[in-house]
Image (cartoon, rainbow, N blue to C red; front, side, top):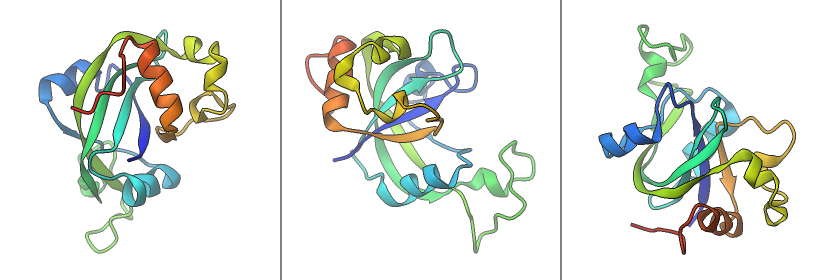
Length: 158
């Protein structure tokens, strides 16, 4: 099993909306490195931190899981979509997405500042200078630590 962090701006798609929807596709990723992780590395059952970015304070709100592996991001081929890419075609879709579903909200959100202040999280990609990817891997150890910081006894699986 792999562990991930996926960023969403709360005014675009908040954790509460994922809980309400029960499942969503993760569209609009337009970075090749993030696309490759969604296409090649994310597997059904992998766990995901749902991270609210562009918010004060930025924080992890909950744990979700991958429920559908990478497939073409249809928004790239929709001229009405803000994620439209004129170079994306059915033969060469260029961009990928995965589906996620919520597992559990953290009992207490874990802010970026709290993570930065925890020496046990040293080396976490999110905390590295210049790390701006909207999709990034998280080690199992870091995932466990953040779950505990968020009030969960262990990593939730269902």
